Length: 497
Image (cartoon, rainbow, N blue to C red; front, side, top):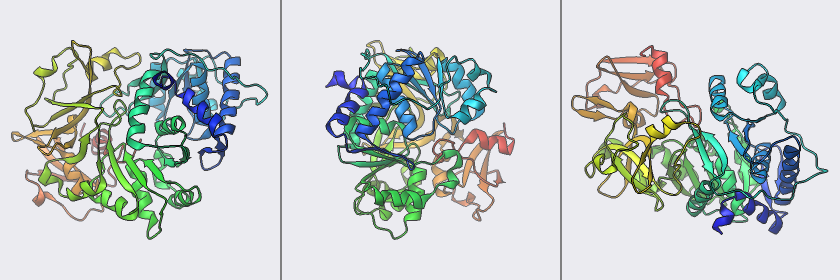
């Protein structure tokens, strides 16, 4: 079984032969059964081979989440090429940077993006620029024999801790991640899973579950068509949703008094979920078990908590942090002192914080990414290598382990404020302000930033002194999930850099 997991294509094609009439994917515009989709993947693999894409080639795939994206990615897996995946919300500057980092042989995108690419030097340099077409007359039946350490997929971090890093996922790593996530989410043949998260589709293909892609662009999050997705839940008998907190909160707000008896499991992650938000989701979908999953690009999952338990901890300031649950059984976790120094060869024992103390969350495990592509500096900055060969990942998140065995999150380490001999976590106070405000340190002074429509000024509720209050039209959020405050963008708006 482990050899098969080293290439997820094996599992996908096996399910296609066993259940050819089961729905593989619906993306809002098109629907394919496993049999139909497998045929199209094989035809695409034949086409890509004919135009010169070979095993080991890196191919930049800039396609919106949907049937075409996964047809291309699965075809690249079949021929042993590496899919370099970019989210459609990326900026031009980020696109150019990612092109430089990945050094690809081919660029696959819809015609409008390929046309724009002629004006971007980094894309013009890429030798092959095929479209999304393929011929059904020829199919590639063979599956490339890949070594476990061959690179299957390269994705990019959000860059919230600096320049985005190219996360190199080998076939073995994808297999390990598949095992851990499948254990957590337990999708099976016959399950119908709605998702906004790209990697989840690969897990579904490996387990034989049916996927409903909730298509919306985080770049245009305010245009989310909640009614359309609620109709899809009913029409396709969705029993599981795996989606970002923003999507789930908007879905819950739009569902009103609708009833979804077939919806049994909800997993949400990619950004913080505060107790009142967990309550909204759980109360809107009472038949579902709601899980909040904490993780990152490099380590997914790290921990999880069920909504009722999070709801019980409704005053974050009492706890000192946001409870993100029990560490996953596959995850080793430690808390080290907060520092911006590179710690690659520093003994972990020299870094550990006392029990219960605040620090940076670091993790290790078979599903924790151990390397980046073409970025030795990121490796030195983000990893801690032990003499016995274990690689620890620095999450960049501040937190602590409670005496109750639960992990508590306090926000990004770089946004923690050391003030009057104590750590202040703006992240915790943002919950009380429903992400419509935060606290910044500038020139030694604490500044409260609020959106213009917030009537309450809040300073009397803080156990620290606010020097100034500044107002903005809107607090900027991260472009990937719309759940975390983009502090860099906020400082630019306020001209505090």
